[in-house]
Image (cartoon, rainbow, N blue to C red):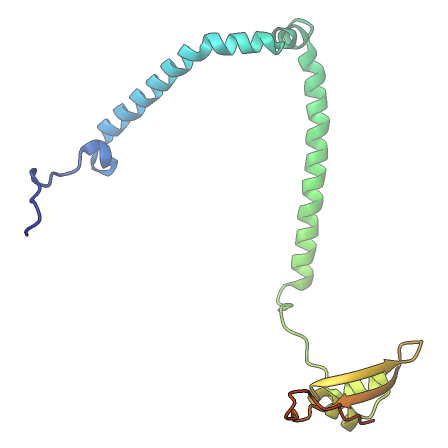
Length: 174
């Protein structure tokens, strides 16, 4: 069976769906209408806003700030806050400039050079050849002195399984 055909021809989208097709006067008019309707919408909510303001003491705010000149104290406090914020921002900018001058031209995102087995052996007071053998082993048993130095290392070598399916005892090497 054939699928049913659409009843209507495909139409061009309405201009409201394509604001890029509007002329500049149409855009200005659209913006003005939008702003006007937002004002009407807010005006309709004014009674509720007034009741909420009354319930939360906005009249007290008016008395303290306007009638008793409380805004002067607020402006003095804001002046102090502005100075503190400016001081903090200035110190951060100075720190950023200092770091920029100190580290410009250097790529500090490089990885460190790998430590060689000989360096590790020298640091730990071990034989380098023995350390390489331990690094290639799969399982080690390491015993330490009380001060943290290595007292002994046993290399546990895996053995083939017996027919019973149990592993054999590991061979110990010192």
